[in-house]
Image 1 (tube, one colour):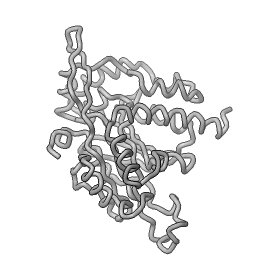
Image 2 (cartoon, helix red, strand yellow; image 1 turned 90 degrees about the vertical axis):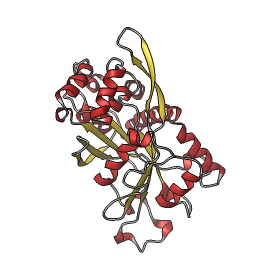
Image 3 (tube, helix red, strand yellow; image 1 turned 120 degrees about the horizontal axis):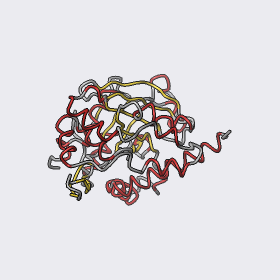
Image 4 (spheres, rainbow, N blue to C red; image 1 turned 120 degrees about the vertical axis):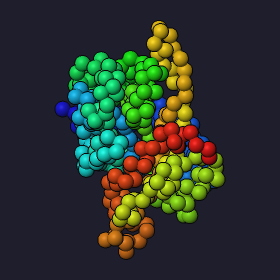
Length: 309
């Protein structure tokens, strides 16, 4: 029986593997961290708090949230609220970490059955290659095995024609059919930064002065109705992606990769009188907000990646 310490060791391996590949793929991460160090906002990369990480999945019986969440539930995460995104045909849960040093997790899935018959056919032509829940085949106490699984193909390389067809109906579907379980984003907690950079609004200005392009869907600052959770994000970086050309060869196209998010969690009213040096994570607004997340999803959408700075 694995101990809490053992499971934290596994979780450390999984998160390190995810972040290593994510940072290699998303150049904005290095640019932002380097600029923050240069300007004295942080001393090193380790000074940043990772508010949460997010994953996208396909809602089919052998995959989706019910499969993917097993990895993190095993490591001590707890499932929290469920969210519905009707227009995007998505469901999601967020998960609280087993210790405060770990990020929250947000897992979404496409409601495949809500798409057109043609889109469902395309998706299932790939996902049906996965005959049973692949997570059930893993030793979840082996961090290296889980890390390898998260970065291996689940199905064959999609064709460019299939990717384009899915994009017409659901850009989320197209993203997942190619990117699979790649880390969709990680999130910098800006409320921990020195003033005046400790708000999303000010940090957005700082990023734009550094030449970072931000998602402006619904406004650059996404704000919860209670005013306590504010979020923003970069526009996903375009990556060279190799597709099956349908004739036994390959073709390369640029598609949306991953992005960086920023979160400001304000102190809850009942703790408003706490001295600033006593404020901890538990005193700030927790959880997520469907309206904010709905617009953050669009960081990978073409109306963001295709616009000018």
